[in-house]
Length: 78
Image (cartoon, rainbow, N blue to C red; front, side, top):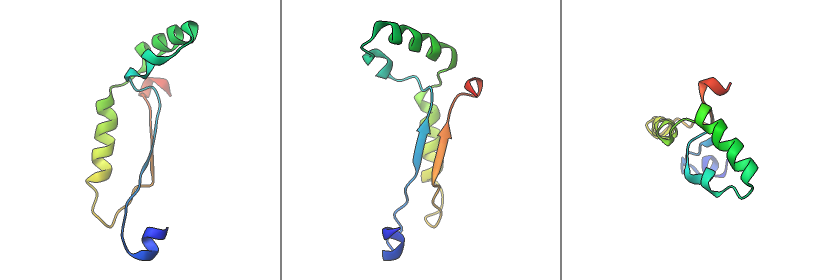
């Protein structure tokens, strides 16, 4: 809002990713939780490239267009 009032046209987009296959699964301390999450992500996880495509889409919009938010999740997780 401050950017719009000042005419700086800074664009912001919030991403809400769901099951995205990243290295974060390797940092779950509780073994039971880690095993369950790894199984879940093997079934449903999508690649980080999917998120990159969404980010690229937002960036490629004209300078006078701001996309507020994206919720990104695997189609088989819905």
